[in-house]
Amino acid sequence: MGPNYSTKKKKVKDIKKQKKRNDKIDKELKPKNSEKKGLTILLLGTGESGKSTVIKQMMILHKGGFKNSDFVTYQKTIRSNLILHTKTLLEASSKLDYQLETNNKEIAKEFLSLTNISLAYNEEKADLVKTLWQDKSLKLAFESRSKFQIPDTAKFFLNKIEEIVEKDYVPTDQDILFCRIPTTGVNHLTFEQDNTIWKIIDVGGQRSERRKWIHQFENVDLLIYIVALSEYDQKLFENLNVNRLAESLELFTRISNDIYFEKKNCIIFFNKIDLFEEKIKKSDINQCFPDYNGGLDFENGKEFIRQKFIDKAENMKRNIFTHFTCATNTKNIERVIDAVKITAMEYILKEDGFL
Image (tube, rainbow, N blue to C red; front, side):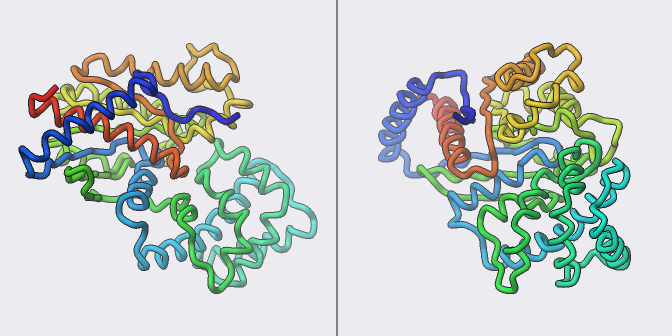
């Protein structure tokens, strides 16, 4: 059986009861007040934690999916990334002393000479990528990706290369969910549901982007902080001496002590639970947290990390809710977002004095 991707302090039965209660109150409110409520949710987290993927899921669930222009943009990005990821894996293979098969050495040399001129996608490079990805040294390098910088999703696309290089290739929703384009600046998503106008704000998680966060703090009703569980053995893109999960915990500590957020309800998404479940079978959490002694155990590991974050939120004067998520899984995110809506509706009802 797979992992239970979502958890909350209340039992599932209690959540269902609360939802019925909220629905009943909301139904009673509508005749008395037809004015739509507004709710602003701010997504925060470090780079590559999965914030933008959550936004994409909300577009699928609440905005009818992606626009035609999105498919064109992502097709170009996915194809370009195939070239970049293969170059990265070849360079990593060399540094890690993973030997290419003899008949692939000349192919690799040709590919690198082409990419040194330009990383732009073309059919010639794509044909070389098809061959090189079958080499075991590149697959070994990918399994050692904690030692260098490459997205976890690179393997997903390299395994689909035959489809991606077809002239009439159009990305699927799943392809777009897996494709990463770093968030810069501030992005907004607005939709209406349950007589409420929902405004979701996503800001870049890279260090250089965080100075923009302060301008988004005012008038936020709910904070969602996203943690990439699986990054406990990976380093920051900006600083190879800093552990990614440790950086996320430090950032959350600063946020939880910020006067803007100390009275805000907070939901933590412990994301990439699927990758975490696979990784912990062979990579110990104690390389990030020396006080961890739960071994290579999925349940021990995820609960230990969850508690680390909860302990840092002791200054927050409102509730902390947690969910284990897989942001690329639409059904999982739909269930989690439904739970988030219940939390948000509770906030509205309390603000209006009905709870």
